[in-house]
Amino acid sequence: MLRKDRNHPLPLADALALTKGAGCRLLVNDQSHRAAVQTPAASLMDDDGRIELRTRLVRPMARDTVTLDQFERSHWREAGAEQFGELWEAECANVPQFSESSFHIITGLLLPIWDRLPAANMRVYRFETDAGERVIGRLVTPEALALIHQGLGLGNAPALSSDEAWRAVFERGAVLDLAGGLQLRRSMVMGAYRVELTGFTNGAVAQLKALGLISEIIAWRLRLFVPVAEDRGPAILAAILERHPLLRANARAAA
Image 1: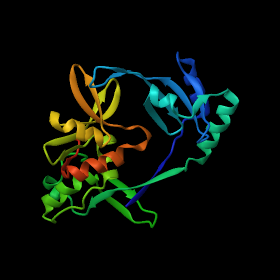
Image 2 (image 1 turned 180 degrees about the horizontal axis):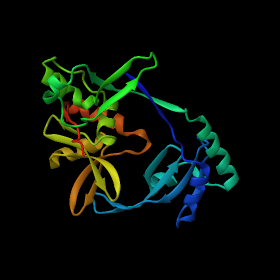
Image 3 (image 1 turned 135 degrees about the horizontal axis):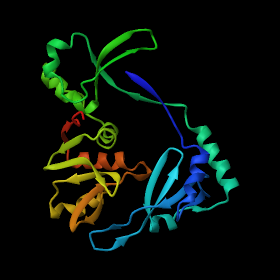
């Protein structure tokens, strides 16, 4: 089924209020004609022990964190409030009122098969479709479909696309088990969610970095992350899945 969610771009007044913080300023992009508020971001240490300075760009529907080197090579420049406001409002006006996404519902006589359904997301939903059909059932995330099919003896579930797998990890906290002993999960690092790859060997680091992953030394330990800025995550995840196919997706247990 398809659902519509209302988009909530950051209002101009809230964006301007961000500039009251230290090190914040208004920016416009000469190439894309977009606006952003530059705010500080935590620095990182790479696997060579070098400190990597970063900055955050707050936009109407996104917050991207980039290195200062990437920022200095970009087309962002400081702007006055009037020009910034015009571009910010224009971008907000172009944001669709709703975003569409697909979802799955298991409905019917659920009690006889309740013990064969995943323990996550046990809430029962009641809703009405645009056609007037009333539905009562449990929401099933794409990463839980394999367990549903296995529990009900329905055969193999449809494979997750890289976009679905990315949303499962980054938005819902699912854990992906990949071939080769790798695991992809959402981790909280320095107060922000990151998508981390674990289970790699030292010999595989160079190959994984060539696919687009970034390495950082945190608490004297090498860690690999899939970049979440600039919508690069799904494409990099697709490259990872080509070499390390998805074995199973473990839905996050309900809190």
